[in-house]
Length: 381
Image 1 (cartoon, rainbow, N blue to C red):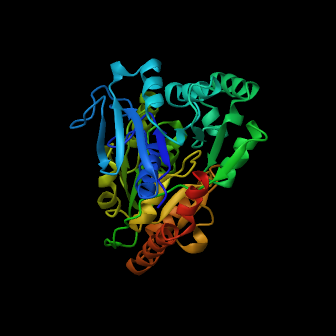
Image 2: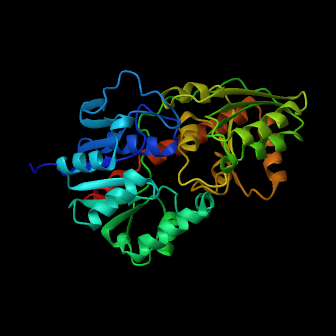
């Protein structure tokens, strides 16, 4: 039997972190799905996104098996994480592939590509932009990102990496900015252990909704709250996610205070990924009117849990209504969002069960696609 190929994953935040959202879950899922085919190591930090205190029960500055006994993880203590220390550790870690996440991480993406340019590391670089080249992402700090992209292209750094696109849209974005690049499509991997569906009680005219995402303008929570001002049915909305933009959250709270009596809102703060399924299964509809998602792990978590979704058309999940798993709607038509909420509120128990079962089966079909793992075999040949 041939020796396993080796993959070294560099990522700013990793398990047990969860506040950075989808990129953490994407990397965790890759590790768990590929651990039997490849020798996998991860280099990351010992502190979650936007936190000052390190993870509890995690040993820093040494290789540990925090996620799985087959996966070695090195958690850099913040004060120990320097360019020199990262370079030394990467050079000491024998690997065939170095997998980089996002486009604009100074230490975990830009620096390794620079080291490859200088000939200081020899492993094949695989770079996943994770939506970083989409217009909605580039609109945040656009000047710095434009300079970086231009320099990246001018130096020919894109020729040193294999780009991992998670869908055709991302491939188009990559080739737009970096013509002639080598791009391999491999769909996002997801949790493979699906829970049984749970059909909670559904009364006509009453709807329990849930929003799970970071709270910042990109995710459009305020947009949702403003729509709820005009909804006539009895709606309960649970909000889960860290506040990343305090000024935006204040606008959301102001709107919440003005909502009519038939609308109730509960904010629960961030919840660890491992606890999301039971929380989701207490609701009838997942809502995320996002301005853009590369994948949307919380959306898929809803499908996985058997919860229909109401999302924007700025995600990979399309034509949902045809399969009775939800709606993907344009953001420029708030009436369609309102009508979808009113329709879901009017569901009987039988109709809700039908849609919930369809959502669960939609996720099961995705999970059981044998091509998923094979796409990664092509990415790491």
